[in-house]
Amino acid sequence: MEMEGRRVRRFGRGRTRSQARSLLPLRTAAITSTANLSNTISCWFCDYKISALNEPLFRFGRRHARSLRVWFSIGIGFSLTALLGVTVILLWELGRALHLFRQKTELGNLSTALLFGFSPSSVSGLSMSLADAGYLLISTLISVSVHELGHALAAACEGIRMEYISFFLAVLFPGALVAFNYELLQALPQFTALRVYCAGIWHNAVCCAGCGLVLFLLPLILFPFYIHSESPMVLDVSSTSPLSKYLSPGDLIMSLDGVHIHNAEEWMEMTALIDNVTRQITDHTEYVEGFGTVNGRKGYCVPDFMIEDGQKIQSVDNHSACSNDLTAFVTIPCLDMRVSDGGNSKNGHPKRRQSTHCMNAEDIVKLNKCGDGWATITNGSSCTCSLDESCLSPLQMSGLSWVEISYLGYFSPECLQLGRNSFLVSKTSDLIKSKCVGTFVFIGDVISMAHSVRLTAYQPRWAFHFGAYLPNVLERILMCTFHVSLTLALLNSLPVYFLDGESLLEVTLCHFTLLSSSKREKVLQVCLLGGTLISILVFVRIFYNLFYV
Image (tube, rainbow, N blue to C red):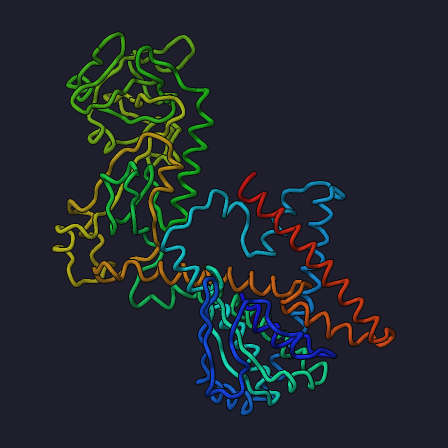
């Protein structure tokens, strides 16, 4: 993404300027002054050069030269360590590709994460939306600007002015570069030049640390305007989501199966737990002829008078069915011996005559729970129904989960009228007592259901729609910038042509005085050629495994 700037900066020792020209098809004249900058436009490359920041950056670098030298000297240690680390990773990946090492998925995923700043599982089946592309563009511009700013400041503190800053777009990849006076850069001492070459990698690493710190402190920073991790707020519901007829942007998810949810992470963890419980108890389900299966561990304590008023299952074409949007429930035996129903069965459990009823699910979900299929039981027992109640479990298809979802319609007209211009924390109890809170039942695949809703842990203290999206936008930009900056730092540490790793390796080899200049040049070329070929092989293999396996 920054190839031209790096070629202008390096190939310093013992080479002519013509050898350092970019391989990009540029048709710009040689730059003789900052007032005569020419921009480039072609079918696949365009750039825009500016020189307005030359003097401010140079004056800042000279004014704080002593502190900046210490700062960038620390970056040398980090950059050389990164060079050694990515070289080891490349050799490890080469060994795996040649089957020299035993295949270990965990180590392979770790090496991919180290090289690219993300794990394979995070991009498996990845589909990028227009918003994702926007976040990637912004984070890329931030990362490459931070990278080039490091080079510019490191050169300025050594008395080297930059010629210009260029922002470019090569095919679809944005980038930035800085150009220096080649002769002055070539004349620098080796350790001083190393500070300039390492500055970009070091600044990208610091950018990663800064993004992580801001993400950690973001709830505290936004505290005057937002409440964090009280209940997740719905930002978007997919039009194909089964929850689209119940939830709207701005609603708060209160609970799943009676368990209070605080943020999006708990939402995903809870749905995974519910799905796991459903799978584990599949073998304990009982088939009801003509309808489906009954989950014998997830039920409600239904009063007998409601059962007597309910409808019996109707048989239509040898299949059981409930009419008028009613749901089929079947009585299940309570395993709690404190519950009696006028006699015991032969196995010592309370005797319940199994029967199937059509009930209104909206009324049933308000009752106490029974059975041990719930993630939590609020009444303290797996099946504690009173003498005048029966434990009824919903009938459903095998493998499908029955999930209760409670939500708060915070941005509905009624709720806005109730709590307008007030702090959310002070009006939550009033909203819960009103009709703003609703509960519905979802039957199906809870994992796909959970992914069909986009949530945020932040709630605005005042009711305005744009404010609900601001923390999520900040989080996405910070997270994307973290990954892109990490990737840029590690890729530039590779011992390959046209990247910072080439200059690091060249200057490092200059310290091996036992080798003559010609031998150091040969070693450099062998290392760069080998590193470039291995990198291409490893990257092709990694991308193939990510997107085609």
